[in-house]
Image 1 (cartoon, rainbow, N blue to C red):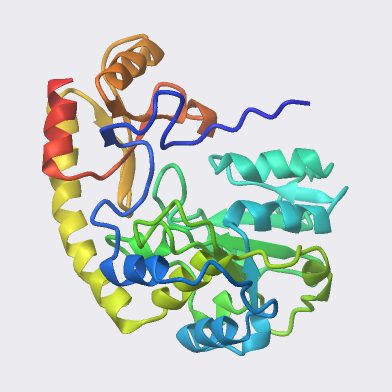
Image 2 (cartoon, rainbow, N blue to C red):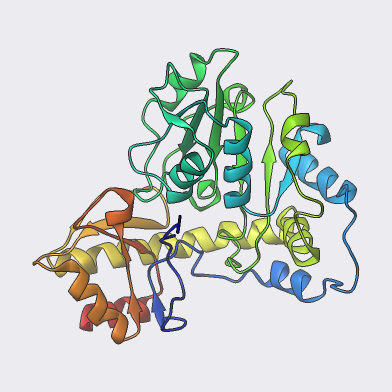
Length: 318
């Protein structure tokens, strides 16, 4: 079986000049994190236990180090978690990152509602909509012992407004999947980590993990993520992104596009007119790439990452 992965970013035509198709922080890369990656020693293996990195991440989140698991990427962990629940029921958000469903298919998970599923995926702010996960707090409050909820926190650091649905106690009941490369503007570095629920047994997941899931550059990025310099830069970038998002939303509405609400650094919009695939093809030929949201179950819509004014002006001319 050939799996057709649909993602934003570079494609067969190369790197788009104006890439609205990804949700990376357009203020990036974070200078502190980039310098750390460039100085990483690629001539040696990382510590296979990731002792120092695990401690840094645990301290950053205020949790015990035994709750921190390293992953090669969010996608790697999605497949690993799905493998752990092979043949069981899975509950997916209505609109979601495609790897949830592809991993479920690969490992024979069966679609189920939230009551019957053993594995439940959530994302907040969600992709592609950038909105709160519906009734997430109620879902977590109603968890049974056999449930495993994975909360994809990829865009939590890029929340531009609003507040999370879960408080600290509720977060302790879910698997938190973190991928800082988007917030740092370094999506080419593939590294992630997971915070296990309080009291969870992580041995089965660890047994499914290959050796050295994170290389030297990923270690450097994750360590930099925990540093005050990176967090200060991120906080400043959110101020800029809010202004850019307001401008970009006005532009899209001026073009006659319907814009859906979003709390993150991206949003979905329905362009006016027909034949969206042809329009996207023409824009791509001019160096402008948007993400067709049909693969998310939103035909007729595109997902746009927030970009600087110059890129927005190019979209307006396109």
